[in-house]
Image (tube, rainbow, N blue to C red; front, side, top):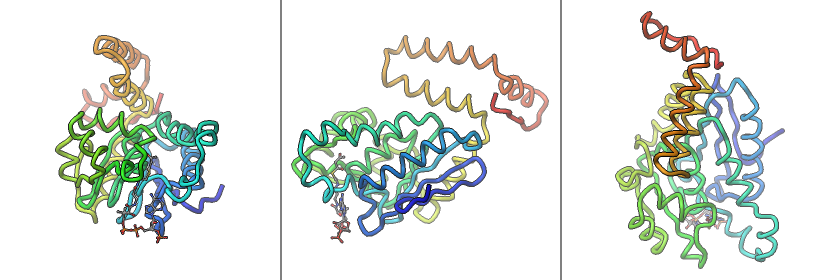
Length: 258
Ligand code: CAA
């Protein structure tokens, strides 16, 4: 498949999806999100890919859902088609690690898809926000829930009710982003992080991701049990034997992803 609104590249075990609709600050129109879905579906079944980076331009990761496309929507159309469910589902259900490398605006749906990724590396010019209230709507792809879990009630209320933007430093202090880097280093740092993840055993990385995500869905005791069972199951893998043998023998491990 050819892509018009995203740049889709693979380098070794790492793939990058770059949102590329600069004139609209990467507003998430249906065509672009369909391309993101298609790319993720290719990557899910591509065994050579172990980690994915989702990124945008220096000026905008994404300035939100496409307001011009949404403007005339009628309730029953979006209720029946539920496009946000499809787009969000594609990212939420993606099982391999996925990093959001965010520079510039990550607003509305842009902030929401960044939060659906496993973690966010932010450039120092990143600006996060849920300004939907200024359009007389509210976040509709999980923002009220994910932002609240990430930054707590006070800041989530502040951002969603005022519509103000939050800079990278505030976002890091609040726990929304894992690290801040200078803008001109963002892609290199994200690629380095992705390569580090990709060098681990893929099934173990996938199980780790799955287990951390369980923390948002269960009680502490259920989550700990889930973790313990998966931890125990890892001792059935060749990679666990290799990883521990390599440590003991003071050499680099060679994982077979099985
Ligand atoms: N949808 C559609 N087009 C958008 C857009 C969006 N979310 N954001 C920016 N654009 C377009 C602008 O209309 C403009 O297009 P034209 O040149 O054709 O007029 C172009 O991108 C450049 O934008 P600006 O001229 O506004 O650029 P700026 O630098 O002056 O301002 C900005 C940048 C502050 C991000 C401003 O564009 C802005 O406020 N954008 C909207 C942000 C927003 O409200 N996002 C939430 C959308 S709703 C949503 O996401 C719901 C949900 O939960 C799913």
